[in-house]
Amino acid sequence: MTDVAIVGAGPYGLSIASHLRARGISHRIFGAPMHTWLTQMPQGMFLKSEGFASDLYEPSGRFTLGAYCAEAGLPYADIGLPTPRETFVQYGIEFQRRHVPDLEPVDVTGIEPAQGGFRLRLASGETLRARRVVLAVGISHFAHMPEELAGFPAELVTHSSQHPHFDDLAGREVVVLGAGASAMDCAALLVGAGASVRVVARSAAIHFHDGAMKLPRPMMGRLRAPLSGLGPGWRSRLCTDAPLLFHAMPERFRLLVVERHLGPAPGWWTRPMVEGKVTYHLGQRIETAAEAGGRLRLDLVGADGTRGRVEADHLIAATGYRPDVRRLRFLSPELQFRTAGDAPVLSRNFESSVPGIYFVGPATANSFGPVARFAFGAGFTARRLARHLAGRRITAPAEDGVGAAAAPVWRNAG
Image 1 (cartoon, rainbow, N blue to C red):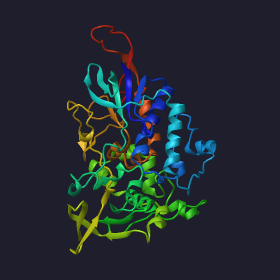
Image 2 (image 1 turned 90 degrees about the vertical axis):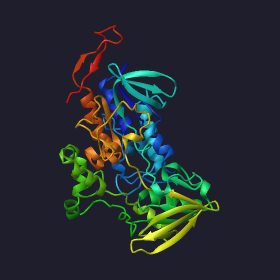
Image 3 (image 1 turned 120 degrees about the vertical axis):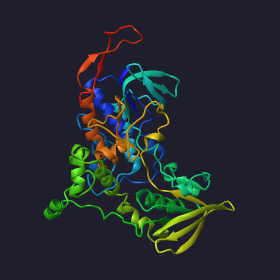
Protein backbone atom coordinates (compact mmCIF):
# COMPACT_ATOMS: atom_id res chain seq x y z
CA MET A 1 0.00 0.00 0.00
CA THR A 2 1.19 3.49 -0.86
CA ASP A 3 -0.51 6.79 -0.13
CA VAL A 4 -0.27 8.13 -3.70
CA ALA A 5 0.38 6.48 -7.05
CA ILE A 6 1.32 8.79 -9.94
CA VAL A 7 0.69 7.43 -13.43
CA GLY A 8 2.86 9.26 -15.94
CA ALA A 9 6.36 10.77 -15.86
CA GLY A 10 6.13 13.82 -18.08
CA PRO A 11 6.46 17.44 -16.87
CA TYR A 12 3.35 17.20 -14.66
CA GLY A 13 4.00 13.79 -13.13
CA LEU A 14 7.66 14.56 -12.41
CA SER A 15 6.89 18.00 -10.94
CA ILE A 16 4.22 16.57 -8.63
CA ALA A 17 6.45 13.69 -7.52
CA SER A 18 9.26 16.09 -6.61
CA HIS A 19 6.87 18.09 -4.42
CA LEU A 20 5.49 14.96 -2.71
CA ARG A 21 9.03 13.73 -2.07
CA ALA A 22 9.96 17.05 -0.46
CA ARG A 23 6.92 16.80 1.83
CA GLY A 24 7.66 13.20 2.79
CA ILE A 25 4.39 11.87 1.34
CA SER A 26 4.54 8.15 0.57
CA HIS A 27 4.18 7.71 -3.18
CA ARG A 28 5.22 5.72 -6.21
CA ILE A 29 5.48 7.08 -9.74
CA PHE A 30 5.28 4.97 -12.90
CA GLY A 31 6.22 5.54 -16.52
CA ALA A 32 9.19 6.19 -18.77
CA PRO A 33 10.55 9.73 -18.20
CA MET A 34 9.41 12.23 -20.85
CA HIS A 35 7.95 9.33 -22.85
CA THR A 36 5.50 11.36 -24.94
CA TRP A 37 8.15 13.94 -25.80
CA LEU A 38 10.56 11.19 -26.81
CA THR A 39 8.20 9.04 -28.86
CA GLN A 40 5.41 11.30 -30.13
CA MET A 41 7.10 14.63 -30.78
CA PRO A 42 9.29 14.82 -33.89
CA GLN A 43 13.02 15.26 -33.76
CA GLY A 44 13.96 18.75 -34.89
CA MET A 45 10.84 20.54 -33.63
CA PHE A 46 10.93 23.50 -31.24
CA LEU A 47 8.74 24.30 -28.24
CA LYS A 48 6.13 27.00 -28.72
CA SER A 49 6.58 28.25 -25.16
CA GLU A 50 9.35 30.71 -24.32
CA GLY A 51 12.37 29.48 -22.38
CA PHE A 52 11.26 30.94 -19.04
CA ALA A 53 7.88 29.16 -19.41
CA SER A 54 9.31 25.72 -20.21
CA ASP A 55 10.50 24.62 -16.77
CA LEU A 56 9.72 21.57 -14.72
CA TYR A 57 9.02 22.44 -11.10
CA GLU A 58 10.79 21.24 -7.95
CA PRO A 59 10.11 22.98 -4.62
CA SER A 60 13.25 25.13 -4.52
CA GLY A 61 12.62 26.49 -8.01
CA ARG A 62 16.34 26.47 -8.76
CA PHE A 63 16.61 23.70 -11.35
CA THR A 64 15.07 25.56 -14.26
CA LEU A 65 15.55 24.97 -17.97
CA GLY A 66 17.85 27.99 -17.97
CA ALA A 67 19.95 26.55 -15.13
CA TYR A 68 20.23 23.21 -16.92
CA CYS A 69 21.28 24.82 -20.20
CA ALA A 70 23.91 26.88 -18.39
CA GLU A 71 25.33 23.71 -16.81
CA ALA A 72 25.26 21.78 -20.09
CA GLY A 73 26.61 24.63 -22.21
CA LEU A 74 23.48 24.75 -24.39
CA PRO A 75 22.01 27.86 -26.02
CA TYR A 76 19.18 29.41 -23.99
CA ALA A 77 17.24 32.65 -23.62
CA ASP A 78 14.26 33.47 -21.46
CA ILE A 79 12.58 35.02 -24.50
CA GLY A 80 13.18 34.99 -28.24
CA LEU A 81 15.19 31.76 -28.72
CA PRO A 82 13.05 28.66 -29.39
CA THR A 83 13.94 25.62 -27.30
CA PRO A 84 14.70 22.45 -29.30
CA ARG A 85 12.67 19.40 -28.38
CA GLU A 86 15.90 17.50 -27.77
CA THR A 87 17.06 20.06 -25.17
CA PHE A 88 13.73 19.91 -23.35
CA VAL A 89 13.80 16.09 -23.25
CA GLN A 90 17.37 16.04 -21.92
CA TYR A 91 16.40 18.57 -19.26
CA GLY A 92 13.37 16.51 -18.21
CA ILE A 93 15.44 13.34 -17.91
CA GLU A 94 18.07 15.14 -15.81
CA PHE A 95 15.26 16.61 -13.66
CA GLN A 96 14.00 13.09 -13.06
CA ARG A 97 17.47 11.80 -12.19
CA ARG A 98 18.00 14.51 -9.57
CA HIS A 99 14.54 15.11 -8.15
CA VAL A 100 12.53 11.93 -8.80
CA PRO A 101 15.17 9.20 -8.39
CA ASP A 102 12.61 6.56 -7.37
CA LEU A 103 10.73 6.64 -10.69
CA GLU A 104 9.68 3.15 -11.81
CA PRO A 105 9.87 2.98 -15.64
CA VAL A 106 7.01 0.52 -16.04
CA ASP A 107 3.51 1.00 -17.47
CA VAL A 108 0.33 0.78 -15.44
CA THR A 109 -2.00 -1.61 -17.25
CA GLY A 110 -5.03 -1.54 -14.95
CA ILE A 111 -6.65 0.50 -12.18
CA GLU A 112 -9.72 -0.70 -10.30
CA PRO A 113 -11.45 0.02 -6.98
CA ALA A 114 -10.15 -1.91 -3.97
CA GLN A 115 -10.52 -1.86 -0.21
CA GLY A 116 -9.08 1.37 1.14
CA GLY A 117 -8.40 2.85 -2.31
CA PHE A 118 -7.41 1.35 -5.65
CA ARG A 119 -5.59 -1.66 -7.04
CA LEU A 120 -3.04 -1.05 -9.79
CA ARG A 121 -1.66 -3.69 -12.14
CA LEU A 122 1.75 -3.11 -13.70
CA ALA A 123 3.17 -4.42 -16.97
CA SER A 124 5.81 -6.17 -14.87
CA GLY A 125 3.10 -8.37 -13.33
CA GLU A 126 3.19 -6.62 -9.96
CA THR A 127 0.01 -5.42 -8.28
CA LEU A 128 -0.18 -2.77 -5.59
CA ARG A 129 -2.72 -0.73 -3.72
CA ALA A 130 -2.83 3.04 -3.47
CA ARG A 131 -5.13 5.21 -1.43
CA ARG A 132 -5.04 7.90 -4.09
CA VAL A 133 -4.13 7.92 -7.76
CA VAL A 134 -2.88 10.90 -9.79
CA LEU A 135 -3.36 10.46 -13.53
CA ALA A 136 -0.63 12.51 -15.23
CA VAL A 137 -1.12 10.83 -18.60
CA GLY A 138 -0.49 13.87 -20.80
CA ILE A 139 -1.80 13.71 -24.37
CA SER A 140 -0.54 10.32 -25.49
CA HIS A 141 -3.95 8.63 -25.24
CA PHE A 142 -5.94 11.43 -26.87
CA ALA A 143 -4.76 11.75 -30.49
CA HIS A 144 -7.72 12.84 -32.64
CA MET A 145 -8.26 11.25 -36.06
CA PRO A 146 -11.08 12.66 -38.25
CA GLU A 147 -13.85 10.15 -39.02
CA GLU A 148 -13.29 10.27 -42.76
CA LEU A 149 -9.73 9.01 -42.25
CA ALA A 150 -10.42 6.32 -39.66
CA GLY A 151 -9.81 2.76 -40.72
CA PHE A 152 -7.04 3.36 -43.25
CA PRO A 153 -3.85 1.32 -42.80
CA ALA A 154 -0.83 3.01 -41.26
CA GLU A 155 0.94 2.76 -44.62
CA LEU A 156 -1.47 5.41 -45.94
CA VAL A 157 -2.71 7.45 -42.95
CA THR A 158 -1.10 8.29 -39.62
CA HIS A 159 -1.51 10.85 -36.86
CA SER A 160 1.30 13.34 -36.30
CA SER A 161 1.95 11.73 -32.89
CA GLN A 162 3.18 8.59 -34.69
CA HIS A 163 6.20 10.35 -36.19
CA PRO A 164 9.27 10.92 -34.02
CA HIS A 165 11.05 11.43 -37.36
CA PHE A 166 10.18 11.58 -41.08
CA ASP A 167 13.11 9.79 -42.69
CA ASP A 168 10.86 6.99 -43.95
CA LEU A 169 8.86 9.48 -46.04
CA ALA A 170 11.80 10.91 -47.96
CA GLY A 171 11.09 11.17 -51.68
CA ARG A 172 7.35 10.55 -51.24
CA GLU A 173 4.29 12.75 -51.81
CA VAL A 174 2.74 13.58 -48.46
CA VAL A 175 -0.39 15.49 -47.47
CA VAL A 176 -0.43 17.19 -44.07
CA LEU A 177 -3.93 17.84 -42.75
CA GLY A 178 -4.21 20.88 -40.47
CA ALA A 179 -3.14 24.50 -40.11
CA GLY A 180 -1.74 24.63 -36.58
CA ALA A 181 1.68 24.31 -35.01
CA SER A 182 1.81 20.53 -35.34
CA ALA A 183 0.89 20.72 -39.04
CA MET A 184 3.55 23.31 -39.86
CA ASP A 185 6.16 21.47 -37.79
CA CYS A 186 5.42 18.31 -39.75
CA ALA A 187 5.46 20.15 -43.08
CA ALA A 188 8.78 21.84 -42.32
CA LEU A 189 10.44 18.62 -41.15
CA LEU A 190 9.05 16.67 -44.12
CA VAL A 191 10.55 19.24 -46.48
CA GLY A 192 13.84 18.86 -44.66
CA ALA A 193 13.61 15.07 -45.04
CA GLY A 194 13.14 15.38 -48.80
CA ALA A 195 9.40 14.79 -49.14
CA SER A 196 7.02 16.61 -51.50
CA VAL A 197 4.45 18.25 -49.25
CA ARG A 198 0.89 19.54 -49.62
CA VAL A 199 -1.04 21.13 -46.75
CA VAL A 200 -4.82 20.76 -46.67
CA ALA A 201 -6.76 22.82 -44.11
CA ARG A 202 -10.23 24.19 -43.46
CA SER A 203 -8.65 27.47 -42.41
CA ALA A 204 -8.44 30.10 -45.12
CA ALA A 205 -4.96 31.14 -43.96
CA ILE A 206 -2.03 29.94 -41.86
CA HIS A 207 -1.80 32.25 -38.84
CA PHE A 208 1.86 32.16 -37.88
CA HIS A 209 2.94 33.80 -34.65
CA ASP A 210 4.66 37.13 -34.97
CA GLY A 211 8.46 37.19 -34.98
CA ALA A 212 10.71 36.68 -31.97
CA MET A 213 9.85 38.88 -29.02
CA LYS A 214 12.57 41.34 -28.14
CA LEU A 215 13.51 42.80 -24.76
CA PRO A 216 13.16 45.27 -23.30
CA ARG A 217 9.54 45.74 -24.37
CA PRO A 218 8.18 49.30 -24.64
CA MET A 219 6.11 50.47 -21.67
CA MET A 220 2.91 50.79 -23.73
CA GLY A 221 3.38 47.29 -25.11
CA ARG A 222 3.73 45.90 -21.60
CA LEU A 223 0.57 47.72 -20.47
CA ARG A 224 -1.49 46.64 -23.46
CA ALA A 225 -0.24 43.06 -23.49
CA PRO A 226 1.54 42.01 -20.28
CA LEU A 227 3.81 39.01 -20.56
CA SER A 228 2.69 35.64 -19.21
CA GLY A 229 3.78 32.02 -19.38
CA LEU A 230 1.38 31.61 -22.31
CA GLY A 231 2.56 34.66 -24.20
CA PRO A 232 1.62 38.37 -24.11
CA GLY A 233 -1.93 39.57 -23.47
CA TRP A 234 -4.32 40.21 -20.60
CA ARG A 235 -6.40 37.10 -21.29
CA SER A 236 -3.32 34.90 -21.20
CA ARG A 237 -2.14 36.65 -18.04
CA LEU A 238 -5.48 35.93 -16.35
CA CYS A 239 -5.23 32.29 -17.43
CA THR A 240 -1.81 31.89 -15.79
CA ASP A 241 -2.47 33.98 -12.69
CA ALA A 242 -6.02 32.93 -11.82
CA PRO A 243 -6.76 29.28 -12.70
CA LEU A 244 -8.99 29.00 -9.62
CA LEU A 245 -11.02 31.99 -10.81
CA PHE A 246 -11.38 30.20 -14.14
CA HIS A 247 -12.54 27.10 -12.26
CA ALA A 248 -15.29 29.16 -10.63
CA MET A 249 -16.71 30.32 -13.97
CA PRO A 250 -19.81 28.66 -15.50
CA GLU A 251 -19.05 25.45 -17.36
CA ARG A 252 -20.29 26.76 -20.70
CA PHE A 253 -17.98 29.78 -20.46
CA ARG A 254 -14.98 27.61 -19.56
CA LEU A 255 -15.49 25.25 -22.48
CA LEU A 256 -15.81 28.19 -24.87
CA VAL A 257 -12.59 29.83 -23.66
CA VAL A 258 -10.63 26.57 -23.88
CA GLU A 259 -11.87 26.05 -27.43
CA ARG A 260 -11.11 29.56 -28.68
CA HIS A 261 -8.19 30.99 -26.70
CA LEU A 262 -4.62 30.18 -27.74
CA GLY A 263 -5.34 28.05 -30.78
CA PRO A 264 -2.50 25.96 -32.19
CA ALA A 265 -0.83 28.76 -34.18
CA PRO A 266 2.52 27.80 -35.75
CA GLY A 267 5.71 29.30 -34.38
CA TRP A 268 7.30 32.15 -36.31
CA TRP A 269 10.45 30.10 -36.98
CA THR A 270 8.56 27.58 -39.15
CA ARG A 271 7.42 30.19 -41.65
CA PRO A 272 10.67 30.42 -43.68
CA MET A 273 10.93 26.63 -43.55
CA VAL A 274 7.65 26.09 -45.42
CA GLU A 275 6.80 29.16 -47.48
CA GLY A 276 7.57 28.57 -51.14
CA LYS A 277 8.39 24.95 -50.34
CA VAL A 278 4.94 23.40 -49.79
CA THR A 279 1.69 23.56 -51.75
CA TYR A 280 -1.34 24.88 -49.85
CA HIS A 281 -4.97 23.83 -50.28
CA LEU A 282 -6.57 26.23 -47.81
CA GLY A 283 -10.22 26.81 -47.05
CA GLN A 284 -10.95 23.21 -48.04
CA ARG A 285 -12.06 20.08 -46.26
CA ILE A 286 -11.87 16.40 -47.14
CA GLU A 287 -15.22 15.21 -48.45
CA THR A 288 -14.18 11.64 -49.20
CA ALA A 289 -10.98 9.63 -48.97
CA ALA A 290 -10.24 6.37 -50.75
CA GLU A 291 -7.34 4.07 -51.54
CA ALA A 292 -6.44 3.95 -55.22
CA GLY A 293 -3.59 1.81 -56.51
CA GLY A 294 -1.71 1.84 -53.23
CA ARG A 295 -2.07 5.63 -52.90
CA LEU A 296 -4.57 7.88 -51.17
CA ARG A 297 -7.12 9.86 -53.16
CA LEU A 298 -8.75 12.86 -51.45
CA ASP A 299 -11.78 14.67 -52.82
CA LEU A 300 -11.82 18.22 -51.46
CA VAL A 301 -14.60 20.77 -51.22
CA GLY A 302 -14.14 24.46 -50.50
CA ALA A 303 -16.31 26.78 -48.45
CA ASP A 304 -17.69 28.20 -51.71
CA GLY A 305 -18.54 24.73 -53.04
CA THR A 306 -15.59 24.41 -55.40
CA ARG A 307 -14.17 20.92 -55.66
CA GLY A 308 -10.75 19.46 -56.22
CA ARG A 309 -8.78 16.26 -55.91
CA VAL A 310 -5.40 15.47 -54.41
CA GLU A 311 -3.48 12.19 -54.52
CA ALA A 312 -0.57 11.28 -52.32
CA ASP A 313 1.50 8.39 -51.04
CA HIS A 314 0.68 9.23 -47.42
CA LEU A 315 -1.39 11.55 -45.23
CA ILE A 316 -0.42 12.82 -41.79
CA ALA A 317 -3.35 14.08 -39.72
CA ALA A 318 -1.97 16.94 -37.62
CA THR A 319 -5.41 17.26 -36.05
CA GLY A 320 -4.51 17.60 -32.41
CA TYR A 321 -5.74 15.92 -29.26
CA ARG A 322 -9.11 15.68 -27.52
CA PRO A 323 -9.06 14.54 -23.89
CA ASP A 324 -11.63 11.79 -23.35
CA VAL A 325 -11.58 9.63 -20.22
CA ARG A 326 -13.17 6.77 -22.16
CA ARG A 327 -9.89 6.37 -24.06
CA LEU A 328 -7.97 5.54 -20.88
CA ARG A 329 -8.40 1.80 -21.38
CA PHE A 330 -6.48 0.90 -18.24
CA LEU A 331 -9.27 2.34 -16.07
CA SER A 332 -11.81 -0.22 -14.87
CA PRO A 333 -15.40 0.23 -16.15
CA GLU A 334 -16.39 0.36 -12.49
CA LEU A 335 -14.81 3.81 -12.34
CA GLN A 336 -17.50 6.11 -13.72
CA PHE A 337 -16.47 9.77 -14.05
CA ARG A 338 -18.62 12.84 -14.43
CA THR A 339 -17.45 14.65 -17.56
CA ALA A 340 -17.82 17.93 -19.43
CA GLY A 341 -16.91 17.79 -23.09
CA ASP A 342 -15.57 14.24 -22.48
CA ALA A 343 -12.94 15.59 -20.05
CA PRO A 344 -13.33 14.90 -16.32
CA VAL A 345 -15.13 17.37 -14.09
CA LEU A 346 -12.73 18.24 -11.26
CA SER A 347 -12.75 19.87 -7.84
CA ARG A 348 -10.55 22.85 -7.02
CA ASN A 349 -7.96 20.28 -5.92
CA PHE A 350 -7.98 18.28 -9.18
CA GLU A 351 -10.08 15.47 -7.69
CA SER A 352 -12.53 13.75 -10.02
CA SER A 353 -16.05 12.62 -9.22
CA VAL A 354 -14.47 9.31 -8.15
CA PRO A 355 -13.04 10.21 -4.72
CA GLY A 356 -9.32 9.57 -4.57
CA ILE A 357 -8.62 9.80 -8.31
CA TYR A 358 -7.03 13.01 -9.56
CA PHE A 359 -6.32 14.25 -13.08
CA VAL A 360 -3.56 16.71 -14.02
CA GLY A 361 -2.24 18.17 -17.25
CA PRO A 362 -4.10 18.75 -20.53
CA ALA A 363 -7.10 16.68 -19.42
CA THR A 364 -7.83 19.41 -16.84
CA ALA A 365 -8.02 22.37 -19.25
CA ASN A 366 -11.84 22.46 -19.13
CA SER A 367 -11.60 22.95 -15.37
CA PHE A 368 -8.52 25.17 -14.96
CA GLY A 369 -8.12 26.83 -18.33
CA PRO A 370 -5.63 26.87 -21.22
CA VAL A 371 -2.64 27.02 -18.85
CA ALA A 372 -3.16 23.28 -18.25
CA ARG A 373 -2.28 22.54 -21.88
CA PHE A 374 1.29 23.78 -21.39
CA ALA A 375 4.23 22.74 -19.23
CA PHE A 376 3.93 26.11 -17.50
CA GLY A 377 0.78 24.88 -15.77
CA ALA A 378 2.73 22.16 -13.96
CA GLY A 379 3.99 24.70 -11.40
CA PHE A 380 0.54 25.70 -10.13
CA THR A 381 -0.66 22.10 -10.31
CA ALA A 382 2.26 20.59 -8.38
CA ARG A 383 2.13 23.17 -5.59
CA ARG A 384 -1.62 23.02 -5.08
CA LEU A 385 -1.99 19.26 -5.35
CA ALA A 386 0.95 18.59 -3.02
CA ARG A 387 -0.55 20.90 -0.39
CA HIS A 388 -3.87 19.12 -0.75
CA LEU A 389 -2.40 15.63 -0.52
CA ALA A 390 -0.44 16.67 2.57
CA GLY A 391 -3.73 17.28 4.40
CA ARG A 392 -4.64 15.96 7.83
CA ARG A 393 -3.89 12.34 8.68
CA ILE A 394 -6.39 9.72 9.80
CA THR A 395 -6.01 6.16 10.99
CA ALA A 396 -5.78 3.65 8.16
CA PRO A 397 -8.66 1.18 7.74
CA ALA A 398 -7.99 -2.44 8.59
CA GLU A 399 -6.38 -4.34 5.72
CA ASP A 400 -7.73 -7.89 5.46
CA GLY A 401 -8.84 -7.58 9.08
CA VAL A 402 -5.30 -7.08 10.41
CA GLY A 403 -3.45 -4.03 11.66
CA ALA A 404 -6.35 -1.58 11.93
CA ALA A 405 -4.13 0.97 13.65
CA ALA A 406 -1.19 0.62 11.29
CA ALA A 407 0.01 3.15 8.73
CA PRO A 408 -1.43 6.65 8.41
CA VAL A 409 -3.57 7.57 5.44
CA TRP A 410 -4.17 10.95 3.85
CA ARG A 411 -7.71 12.30 3.67
CA ASN A 412 -9.00 15.03 1.34
CA ALA A 413 -8.26 18.38 2.89
CA GLY A 414 -10.92 20.19 0.83
